[in-house]
Length: 248
Image 1 (cartoon, helix red, strand yellow):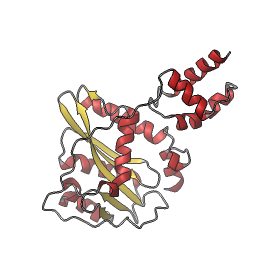
Image 2 (cartoon, one colour):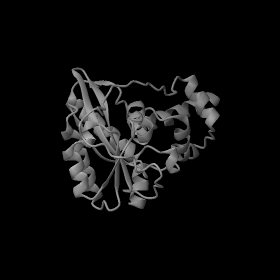
Image 3 (cartoon, rainbow, N blue to C red):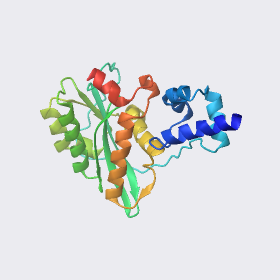
Image 4 (cartoon, one colour):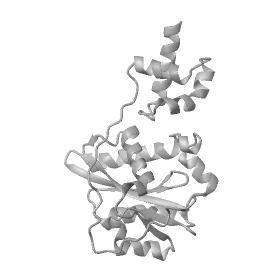
C-alpha cells in the first residue's frame, strides 16, 4: 500500500513537472495540494522531500556567469532613487537586466524588464548581440503593454545600453524616472538578477541551444510559464500575472 501511494505521488509530481521541471519541494506541496486532496493522499513537506529524494527527483542548482555589463563608458550615470521607495503597486518600479543564453555558435542575449511589485516580466527581447537594439525592443514592448506609465521608475545597472542617449530619451519622452545602481553593485538590482537565475535554474535556459531561433522559442515558453504558472513565495503563492492584474 505504501509503495502504491509513493507511486501515485511520483505520477502527480511528474505531471506538474512537465510544465515546471525544476519546481522545488515547498512550491510543489502548495501547487499540488488540490491534486493530493483529490487523490486522498496526505502529504507533508518531509514526506514529499523523502519520496523525491528516494526517486532522485530533487532539483539541483547550477551557477554560471558571463559578463554582460559594460559600465565604463562616456554616458551619464543616474543615481539610485529606489533605495528607500516602498513599492505598493504594479507599474511603480521596473527593473531591467541582460542575461546570456548559450548556443552552439556562442552567446545570445536576453533583455528583461520585470515589474518589481508583481515580479511579472513585462517586456523582453532575445538577440544575437549585446547591441542596444535588444534592450530598446524590450522597453518598447513593456511600455506598449503597460499603456499607463504615470509615476513609473525604471531601474537598471549602469551598463552602456541603459545609459545610452537613445534608451534614456525613450524613458524621458514617456516621463519615466530613471534609476541606476551605484558603483555597479549587483545587490542594488537583486530582483532582476533573481529573475535571470529563475529562468535558467527552473526553465532550462541554462542549456546550450542549437541556434538563436531555438533559444527564442525556449525563452518565450519559459517566460510564459514564469508569468502564468510559477508560484512565488514572496507573492503568497500567487503567480506574477495574477498579482499584476489585481494591482495594475
